[in-house]
Image (cartoon, rainbow, N blue to C red; front, side, top):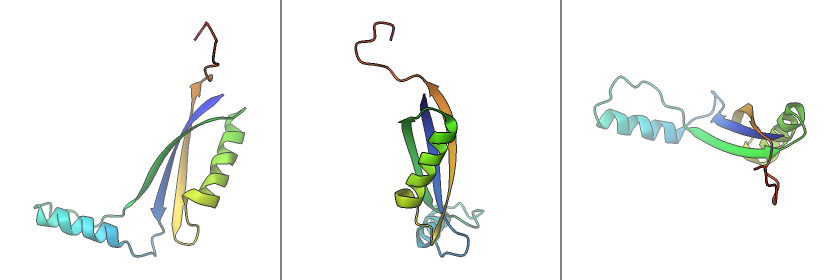
Length: 94
């Protein structure tokens, strides 16, 4: 089965966010004074072929722990949805 995953990586609340502070300052300079806080992060979209959603989520969790997020300073959240069967090369029904 093919799955589409969205991985949201954000700094932990106790970690300073200089990028967020810079963005907030820029928004204030543009007149958006109602913005009180900005937290910057990473948004990743992955497509993967796994036998089922449980295995897909386990693989994504391993990817996040090993590469996508720094566990010391970042949290991550995974959203997963099936997107249909993979297309096989030479398959006339595709």
